Image 1: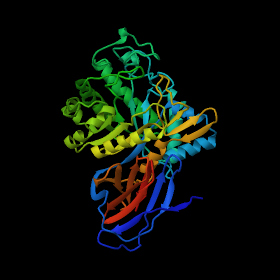
Image 2: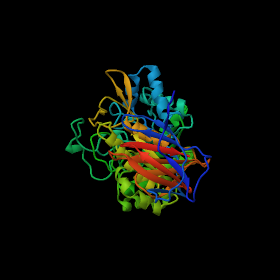
Image 3: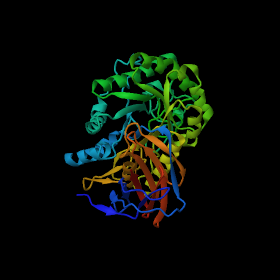
Length: 464
């Protein structure tokens, strides 16, 4: 049974006394106390100046948070007894958990696949006669279906990390050499890695269409596609570099027309854009042919530097933060604070959706290509135990209370604060105390004031 705690929190009207007619709930998490719930007492005002001011002004709609599926994540979950595995999926996707609204599916191998593969490694198969998702039936499809069991309304999207190597001028899945691949100087190519001849571009658009169709036949509906993960990344895992003009050409003259005909229900986003050069983004967004099909923009990593500028310049576009910065396998409180800073940067910049990356990883969080990353849930292979990390609770504090149709509220004053208004009028305010000492704050929203004594190093969510 959950315990209730009484905290020093006061609720006032700005002009005097407020009758005790409204219950204010507070949830608090620290490294040692998880999801502590509070009952609020109402007291009289003293006229002091507030530290935090939340406006009733609604900013962008916020469609929710999400996470990415990966083969290694499913392998980690497979170490758990079935009951524990079910508990993890409930904690991520069910209403009583984080209740993710979105899930990302890699199209072929991503950097947390078991190894390189695509859905058609048959060289020269421009008609995609050998296209297959048989490999996905081992891990990806069971992982996605386990999530859909908890949240049938989960919105799914996909992107490839690399085309099949026979489509690439590099003839390699990677974009750079490393100690976990055999990429050499002979593989290096400047500019576009996908061969930019019409037969290859047409085949690659068909490849992406076939993926959506194949998943639909498995009962998994993909409603959003971004044609390339990180076209600016150079590293030793699967990836593919593109120039801006080639991205515009592919979207506008190959992918867009095919999806308009075969999959009109699937939104095409320009992304995932991991670059802070507006001129490159403008090259695609102002291309007449490409702009006809683009319904949104996906941003990650360096995209955070220009998210506000993009929102101002293209206000009609839906914006998605597509991959939370992944960390280094520390699984600690500092990683959660960094993730909050990223979330706040992107939401203040105008995004409508925010995606975490690997939801579940094993032990030290290492990929097949040697990069240790953080995750929301860490599975310990030695004890078959699932450990919920500080980032898990950060996402739960933010996502658990949001309802479809929520809007971000403007924060007029205050640090480390985000606020939302649900369609039913409920207000959700998140405050983080990053200090090692207790922090007293006076928070004003909707002509009401709350005095909160935020405990050291805590996430705090106020619901009223």
